[in-house]
Length: 207
Image (tube, rainbow, N blue to C red):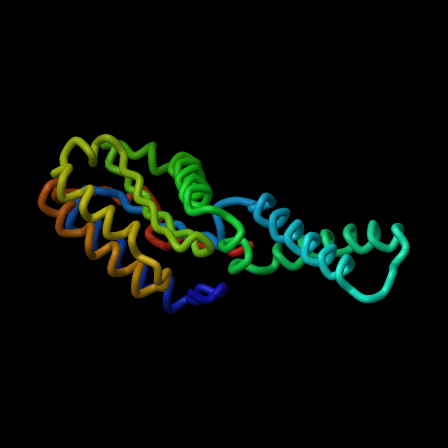
C-alpha cells in the first residue's frame, strides 16, 4: 500500500465495512497506520552498525588519522545513521525483531480499541481491524459480546490467516473483512433496527 491511501481505496474499505454491518450486529472499525511505534531502538542499531563500519575502515585504511578525527567521525556517522533510519521503513524492519514488531502492533491496536470507541458499543459488539504497514501485520480485536458468540476455533483460524498476510493493500483489507463477514453473519446476525454506532470510513494516518 502506498503512503497515500486514496479516496477510492477508502471507499472500497468503507463499502466492505457497511456490507459486514448490514449482515451482522458487529460494529467494525478499520484503522490504518504507517507504523505502530517510534522504533528509536532500530534507528540506534543501524547507526551503531555504521559507526562500527566506519571504525573498521579507519583502522585498515593506509593513512594515519588523529584521534580526534576518529571521535568526530563516529559521532557524525551515528547522527547520519539515525537520520537515515528514521526515513526508511526497510531499515527499521531490518534492525528490529519480529517479536518487537508484533508487540508494537498489539500495543497500538489495544490503545486504538479504546480511543476509537470500539469498546463502548451498546451490545459490546465492537471489532477493530488494525493494519500497520511497517510491520506488515493486521491485528483484530473484538469485544466480549462478539467473542461470546463466535465459534472460537473458526474465529481464531481466520485471525491466523490475517496475521500471515504480508501485502498490506486495499485488496488485502477488503479480503480480510470478507473473511470475517460470514462468521459474524452466522454467529452474530443483524437485528431489526440495527444501529450504526461507529464510523464506516477507515481511519488513516501516515504521519
